Length: 303
Image 1 (cartoon, helix red, strand yellow):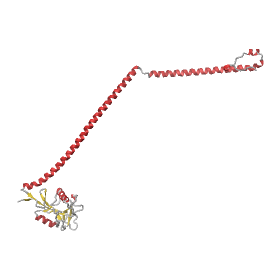
Image 2: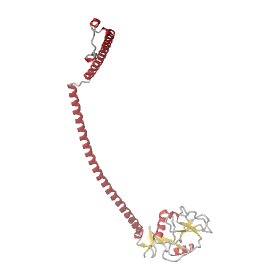
Image 3: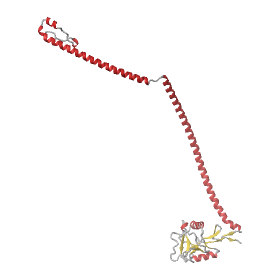
Image 4: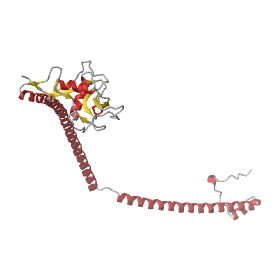
């Protein structure tokens, strides 16, 4: 059979029309011409594709060239010179020096703070010590003041030639007082006055806050737990509602219990009670009621 294989590489052999007539087998004329025309069409398309490809390649190369140019310009703009490198190195060295100086300053500040803290601690210790000394001095002053008051109460007795209080009486602020705490005796208000007058005195007159405080505290401190009151030299016997001391002076400041005096069933005489709040230690009572009493009198001169 006749060999119709195509030439290697995919290209067909170009055959002229004259050659086709000289061949021994002319019946193949139409068929070979068709073959030649197909080869011609395929070869033209290939040239067109190559031209398009070259055009695209040229465009890509142009774009790359433009891009490289822009990139080169950027590199040129940001390129560091030798002077820039030196300047940056100098700035870096300056920053390192500044950092070292800041570290040293911080260390010095820490040392100073530690020193101030130590001094502050010593100052606190000294303040605590001085505060304790001050409190000790205050305590000593209070003690000395009390001793001076006690000595002062004895001065009149010394200056007047050895004055004293009778047995059973106590001396306070140059006055003698009698508190029948250990006695079981009780008296009404008039009998109490009579007893005090026989001793050269009378019922106590409480005309100051200090005297009221002293009287009530003495009763409390000497174990007077009885709810019974102690007669004092105050009454409204001469004029209802007008309270006077036995020496005729009007009451200026009273230390009554809440709601007192209320003159309940003709309560015309006053008594003091051992109540912790000495501002509320008085009550009015019927003068005939029997209770304890408190006398006071001046110092007695020894013969």
